[in-house]
Length: 100
Length: 303
Image (cartoon, rainbow over all chains, first blue to last red; front, side):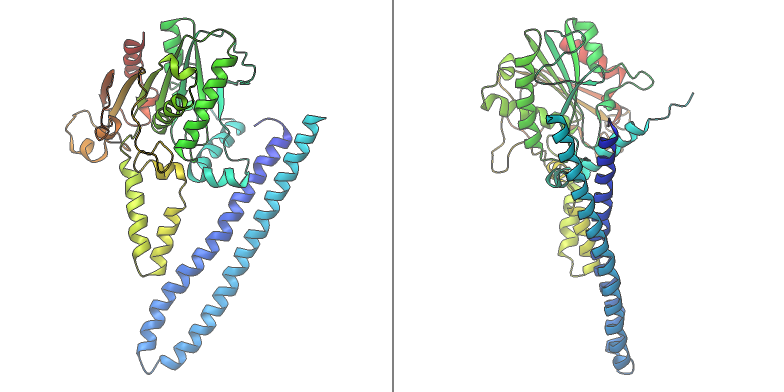
């Protein structure tokens, strides 16, 4: 790891990796959260007294959870793509400087 | 005095670990964390077009590390300039001790193909005629050597005709129990009809091709049948064991911690003729890469 540009590129690589982790992690966490919640909602749905209320709560819960996780996932994706393109631009600039 | 690793060294270790886990993806994305294949002599990277080591010898001794490791795994504790290659160079004379660094997350056969091409360039451009090659591989590094030997011979490379000495240290020729466990766990979790368990299986499945190859010791391109050891070369196997008693239950279960003795010896491979086999009870997987007894054994075999 030599030179300031090389170091910047390395950190951009770390940023891309972490942001991709955030993007994919949020998608996977959403699935874990919703599927575990569904286990409880299935029980509530089986009881006639709680069925109508639980269905409404389920729709609200899943809707809010999806919006939250998808926002985090989108933010991760944007940061990852930004870091990747910044890294690529830096690499091209270094290549141009080496050639000239 | 406590030695503190430099920021550069820490970055290199992070890159090596990230490359081990996700090296094929990092390479595909052009991410700078993907470790490029590089040869080092005395800690300096060599330019393969014009290698200028301090004292080029006619014997090349190349040490190849394992999964998620760096070339520093070969260094003896508290003696950073001493490793198997430097010990052999002292014994053999006229020897250049080299170390390889590579992206361990790539498929093993691709690293093998690149290593074969790298050795050909190195031998062609070496400042003095190369008379002998010694390849020492730790863990995955041993599988990369087997792969490189196959592709070197298939492409009529000059280095492969020099009948290299190949040493496999703790290499999972028949797979590593941990990689097999990860493969089975992911398969089982992916079949369970519960999304939260499937996600765990999918996370395990994110592991690199290099790690996947370790579940069966795959060293060749998919669809290729198992290839024999390079004819004419001398092949040596070294294995470790966690406990000192060879038949200790811990050794039966875990071998050297990651690789069973039978896998390190390639017991399931047919037609292997080994020039030497050695076992070191009480020496675990990582310590196999820098242990005085192993060094002594290498000098006995290779001098």
